[in-house]
Length: 138
Image (cartoon, rainbow, N blue to C red; front, side, top):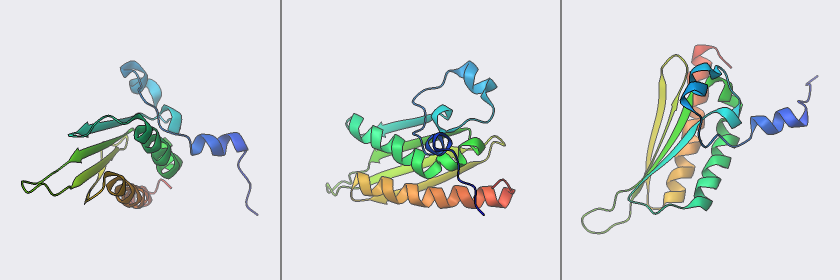
C-alpha cells in the first residue's frame, strides 16, 4: 500500500525554485527543498521576459523539485545564436550541481527559445535521475 504525501509536502516538492539565496545561507543550508534551492536564469542576446522567467521557475520546480534535496543549485542559460545569414537559432543550457561537486549539463539548440528550453529540461530531468540512481541517492 502506498502512503499519500500530505498535500503541503507534495506542493513543496513541486514548488518553483528560489530566485536568490544569500551567500551565508547557501553555506549553512545543507539539504533544502525546492523553494530554497537557488535557480539562476541568464540571457545572452535576448530581451528580459518576466513571464517566461516565471514559467521557467515553475517548470524547473515541477521537473527537478523531487530531486531538490540532492541538488546544490540550478542554472538556466538562454542564448541567441543567430548565424551570419540571419537564421534563428537558440541555445538552452541547464546545469545542476550536487553537493559532491559534480555537475549535470545539458545543452540543446532549437529554432525557438521555448522549444529549446522544453527539450533541454526534459533531457536534464532524465540525466539528473540517472546520475542520482548511479550514486544510489534515489
